[in-house]
Image (cartoon, rainbow, N blue to C red; front, side):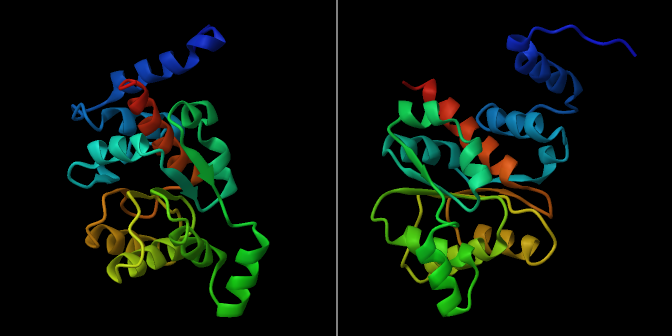
Length: 209
């Protein structure tokens, strides 16, 4: 096995070339940048089959970014992975409330998770929200409840928590709610996947500047 000698600036480009060469099917042009970036982040081709895009999702995302939406994540890891320069180019910001003192207090008082309390805080922002969930199915469950109650309707949701307990169910609940979304059906996902999808959408929006 021979090493490839690739300049640091060319590593991402070369990675995408390798992914492209190993694809076993054509990916629709509108969703391809998102699927490719998730595979690039995870080295997992299963996302070719598991990523779900609600109808018109990409155009909905572009409109939300044009509205200078707030990206809200359920982990600081996802927040740190979202490209800050790309956010700034579009006048968007990113928040994660999980470590906030008021969230800890609310979760303790109400007997819920911090992820649930964070959703409730996001519902009070009074701004367009893009909600990216990479870790906590309880966030998706509460989002779905608030959407169905007409209390909170994010512009769209990235539903990619990873794990075993209520992960599959929460994703399917969110999809069934009819909210515009991208979801990783099944158990796979993670904060890195959530950030990768956010970045892919921001980079798509860059092409419209």
